[in-house]
Image (cartoon, rainbow, N blue to C red):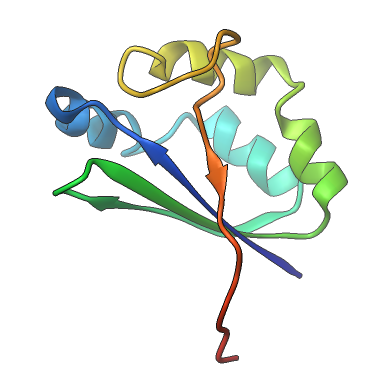
Length: 104
């Protein structure tokens, strides 16, 4: 299992809406993530900086990267783009974080 961590930014005035849209996420998105080997996916918010910290355990980088090519994922990005910093293709701006400590 591969552990992934990344950060994104939600707009300060959109935090509540961001939380609302994730609770619950679309059933088809949940199924897509699980079908692509994603487990234990969590997103945390640093309310002071509006930074989102994402953590997921994945079965492979190939499966993880393939999620971005699906219509469901792209539709989700379009749905979320007004709430957070995004790229031109509506993909959230995301910075992958390097693991520096792990206690199994």
